[in-house]
Length: 328
Image 1 (cartoon, rainbow, N blue to C red):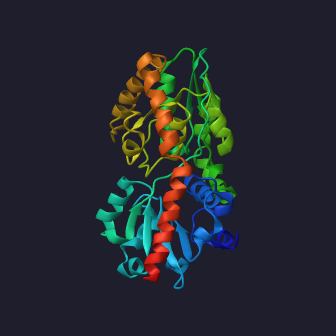
Image 2 (tube, helix red, strand yellow; image 1 turned 60 degrees about the vertical axis):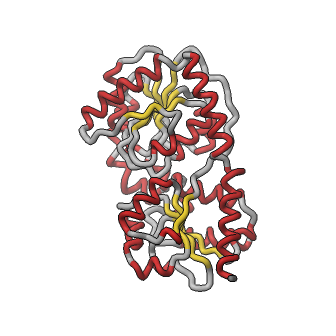
Image 3 (cartoon, rainbow, N blue to C red; image 1 turned 45 degrees about the horizontal axis):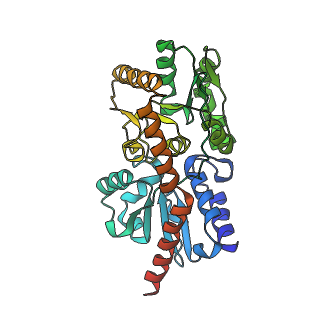
């Protein structure tokens, strides 16, 4: 485990990160942990794998520098990709979606020859029949990505026999982040706690999220955040949940053709109206033959194309090719 330990040690010591790796259980951090879990130690030989940071001090002359970029193009940690000097020292940049690659390509004119897309992955989720006594909605992502709009929409719809489960907290990024950010969203969390038929669950471990998703009917996510992939949507689709979200960022690439996608609108009042109609339609038609057939195909597709069994082969082949290219 020498190579994996080296990568973990470096990540834990990286002070350029806005969140501490060992404390954070966000999407990017969990993806890296799963990559380390599914690849043998020798796959990382000669590889300097850097997660979401363009800090030049993380580069290593004697190893193949691979930047795994899951951040959006305007985030602070990505800005050195605008430096020709930095890009010359990077051997490869791995993006998590074609949408994200295109944004970086047009913003920074990064070389296509150094760029590739390897999509995110999830563990296979065993399907369980959904309960029929009510419709369970779930929101399981960070609060700033659309929770304020979802609460407003849910309260205005006054739905019968429908519950909203909110798994959202700043604790997901560790104590350091939570200490400085939680106060900004406490009012929102309190509103969840005090609203009828909303179950505020706070921070929930990812393994427990997966178990919860098996009982959920709809992932209700009026996204106002430019997702570069959206692991929460992939997990929800794998568990057989209907996805009701916007087409902002890479959400169309990730969720189509299965998701119920609303055209994003920067006029949030218009967005809330459109999203309300889409959510109501998905609730009313969840048990229809057409929806059930779609969801069956959805979970079969996601559980075969977005698994780590598939993705680990892509990563293993990429690392092998990178080493072979250096030798030649």
